[in-house]
Image (spheres, rainbow, N blue to C red):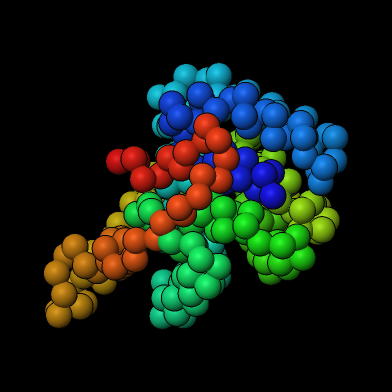
Length: 246
């Protein structure tokens, strides 16, 4: 399902390779038979913005959007399990699903990274795709609304995923919920997270500073993640960007 591969590429860290794939991405959207016309137009506008914009500005905006705070994290299980032990088991289970499908990761990224998950789904039958997306539709809806309220062009990608999942979220309910949330990407919120990490470090006498809390957990997960190789080229002219990201 090429449209999932398109969305996966657009959700990944912007690179020159992504911008060079403008024509391939555009063609895939135009040829898609699943999305409604207005959503295809919205995706085309998003492609134009990401492929024609200044790359450094796009990269900075991406980091500001997805890498500050957890509310817009592209790691799915952060929204379900947080930092609990259940998250580790969920990733093991998801990795087993990838391996059962004959896929191996060739990027240093966690199994629940959404663009990677979408690449996996693109290899599955249509019924499986809808079922998997249905399972995470509540996450997709919240991310779509949070991005919309922050005036981010990325919200259209989640709107498209919701349609593929066959879900029409209650926009008014989501808007009210998101409007009531406290932003977790402000300097004050980030400072508070840092202070909490330091408290955890002080309380835990058995570990080192670099291994405590969410930051340390994230680093340990990346160190332990298995190398998986998506051996087949999923879309001509479009390569995964995450492996080359600093």
